[in-house]
Length: 418
Ligand code: APR
Image (cartoon, rainbow, N blue to C red):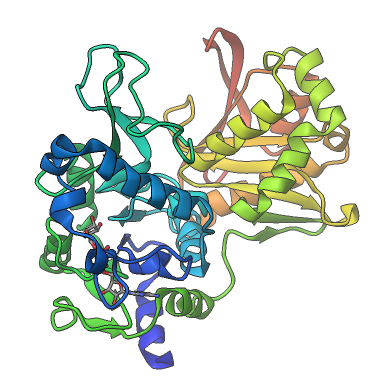
């Protein structure tokens, strides 16, 4: 087993394009039942009664009872070690794609960003009549729904679960992006019986593009005889072991006084404390950097915002601070500039103590050495002495001043080698 994992680990360089496709098996250890196999859902329930548009037309209430029951069960489940490793890989590897057939949302709850959900989400709903007033899908976390079937807030007709049923078309954008991700160096198929198409076919695409193909599944599947490497082990054991073989997380950056850790779900509480700290609140509100909202809303919005950043964010811990984060720092590619953008925010009291410079330098070093980015930009919509001093102290030069989102914004940049 160890030598198999070492072989896979050798292919997982920081430059490698890595695609992981998951199925119900990754959530088994969280207590979410799989579909096939001895205890699978399709043993006790019939697809034709519950997971087709025809079934819904015949008996929407019966279909909803099943989905409502599953939503209640999933709400009580937690992501397991397999979800956590994959979430950390989405930060660790710049060219990483996670495709899932699962509708349970556990990958996202573990902190994975930009998950390609082939079969939709059990947490989404849509108007069965596709009324003009409602969006195609929206999230509704109600558990349980007070009335089944729940009704559309726009037209009063029945809502449907936001999953893709048998006989329905998959979202073409999700399929296209998944197909694109099969042009990769390593393709993993994890915890899936590999029989439901088009997902099952992605493996063949990856192989035809020359990818190393790896299956992680304790049982043999039709894919087992075609992949390069079979890891006959449960995902929640195999993935952490493979992750440990990769060595220390390169994104856990350290400097003399600071530790920068990838922002993972277990940090949410810490992030919450950061955003709700009275001093941070005073700084944000009194300086009118953001509108006055409740601290909880700010904390939630920033957690969602963090989850979208391509290169991830780090929480910055001060060594003297008994494990409390003193801010965040990171690189994002969805920023206002043309390229990656340096992003940081620290408790105001720490700015003067050089923490901002130290954290930003560590992130810039990572950008230039590990990610080999040619140029990084910083945008500040709080143009003041303090931010200007910090940015020039780390070698960033003033580039231009422009309005962004209605705010006066200063852009700074730095090129590799400067
Ligand atoms: N780790 C890894 N694999 C596991 C584990 C585990 N702990 N436990 C079970 N498995 C494997 C099983 O051996 C099986 O091969 O997970 C697989 C689960 O297969 P299915 O139940 O068929 O689930 P999946 O492949 O996701 O099904 C595809 O079928 O009914 C539809 O829409 C549903 O998305 C689903 C699709």
